[in-house]
Image (cartoon, rainbow, N blue to C red; front, side, top):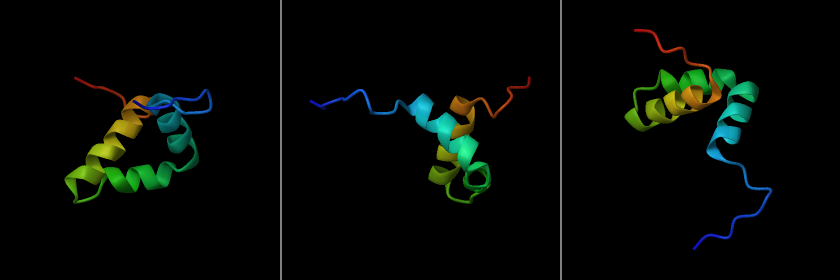
Length: 55
Protein backbone atom coordinates (compact mmCIF):
# COMPACT_ATOMS: atom_id res chain seq x y z
CA UNK A 1 0.00 0.00 0.00
CA UNK A 2 1.30 3.45 -0.91
CA UNK A 3 1.26 6.40 1.43
CA UNK A 4 -0.19 9.32 -0.52
CA UNK A 5 0.28 12.84 0.80
CA UNK A 6 -1.47 16.01 -0.38
CA UNK A 7 1.83 17.22 -1.85
CA UNK A 8 2.00 14.30 -4.31
CA UNK A 9 1.37 15.31 -7.90
CA UNK A 10 -1.07 13.42 -10.04
CA UNK A 11 0.17 12.41 -13.49
CA UNK A 12 -2.08 15.07 -15.03
CA UNK A 13 -0.56 17.81 -12.87
CA UNK A 14 2.96 16.53 -13.42
CA UNK A 15 2.50 16.24 -17.19
CA UNK A 16 1.05 19.75 -17.44
CA UNK A 17 3.88 21.21 -15.39
CA UNK A 18 6.56 19.25 -17.25
CA UNK A 19 5.23 20.23 -20.68
CA UNK A 20 4.98 23.89 -19.69
CA UNK A 21 8.53 24.00 -18.32
CA UNK A 22 10.31 21.56 -20.64
CA UNK A 23 8.48 21.59 -23.97
CA UNK A 24 11.66 21.02 -25.98
CA UNK A 25 12.57 17.95 -23.90
CA UNK A 26 9.08 16.48 -24.35
CA UNK A 27 9.27 17.11 -28.11
CA UNK A 28 12.67 15.39 -28.13
CA UNK A 29 11.19 12.35 -26.34
CA UNK A 30 8.35 12.19 -28.85
CA UNK A 31 10.82 12.13 -31.77
CA UNK A 32 13.09 9.51 -30.17
CA UNK A 33 13.83 6.17 -31.81
CA UNK A 34 13.18 4.40 -28.51
CA UNK A 35 9.51 3.33 -28.32
CA UNK A 36 9.38 3.88 -24.53
CA UNK A 37 10.68 7.45 -24.87
CA UNK A 38 8.15 8.12 -27.64
CA UNK A 39 5.33 6.72 -25.50
CA UNK A 40 6.29 8.89 -22.52
CA UNK A 41 6.54 12.01 -24.69
CA UNK A 42 3.19 11.27 -26.31
CA UNK A 43 1.47 10.67 -22.96
CA UNK A 44 2.88 13.87 -21.48
CA UNK A 45 1.62 15.87 -24.45
CA UNK A 46 -1.75 14.15 -24.39
CA UNK A 47 -2.36 14.78 -20.69
CA UNK A 48 -0.96 18.32 -20.83
CA UNK A 49 -3.27 19.25 -23.71
CA UNK A 50 -0.38 19.84 -26.10
CA UNK A 51 -1.58 17.29 -28.61
CA UNK A 52 -4.53 17.93 -30.86
CA UNK A 53 -6.48 14.87 -31.96
CA UNK A 54 -7.28 15.11 -35.64
CA UNK A 55 -9.31 12.63 -37.61
